[in-house]
Length: 63
Length: 395
Image (cartoon, rainbow over all chains, first blue to last red):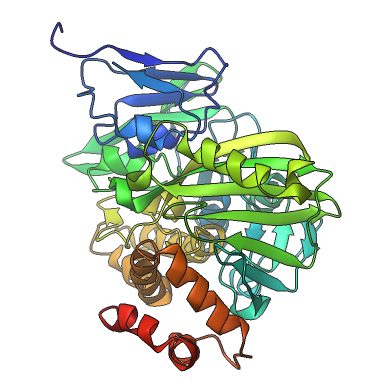
């Protein structure tokens, strides 16, 4: 997917607090929260960046 | 593991799920309540404030999950003029401050005592469908995957609900209809155990900062910021930290816990049922869009949901037509207020700090007999007639 921006979630425990805010607002339902692991479906994600705004601690980066 | 059958499958053991399960079991149904985590109620993702007048209606007895009882709420304007409201009029987050994990566990115990089977570490992976009708879910319990066949499935899986989406019920929310929230439990703070405090204005764009006391010197200090008003990543945290820095009674405090989450502040959903499936609580966007409180509404709707689920099993008719009884029931009880508070929220998020100051100042100066839109506007009109204009369209 060369035309898509890279997607990076800082989920090594340094920023992400596993609250699920991004999961709830993702319009394409492509973010998954499993206890202390968050994953994205990169193929479905359109990089709309709604999750970036919804994250209370700034743990999601797209760019 | 072998597939299994039940009458009612409830996905999610928060307050709405446990309440639904309990009332379905009371109605004679065989109920399975599944929770993806290993511990019900944990981790707590909640400010832990709630009103109390609704508890008898749904059959909840006050217990050890209550930290303390507050007298009322204090609303602080941007220049920190204060308006006090008695807890009876203060909305659905004011009354008790609770241990949410203890509260959730009590409701699960109540459900279990009615004969509900509870499964922990059991996540729904997807819904089972037959000709478009939901007939249960595929679940994973302790690493083992199996199918639960049920004529009635209930999605009580919270803000980040998957069940509604899987069922094809539109539950998406816009950025303006969500607050992104962060909260610290803080020790060694100067909180007042008589009040739940709310700070309005630019300190929390499109939301508010809250201080809910847990005990002398201990409080939940949190913030909600409307996602559409977020300017840069981590705005919720930035605003909360700034607020704490500017309040010496809290800046000296020590953070001992941190939680985050999303809160919907949307108008009510148009649809909360489909063939074989009902949604309840935060999953059905039943959170009060003005206060952000979801417990009372989730429990009230949960009781109705459980009763209708049991009736549908009894009647052998888990169709969306039959479920209209739930759809109409919860709307009759909650929808008008949800809609009214959504309109009020839409107005409030547009107010300037200057207007907030005037409104709170006007209210602080009078003793309102009863908290109503009419009385509030009258108080504002008497002191700041020019401000009333801002609300004409709203009325």
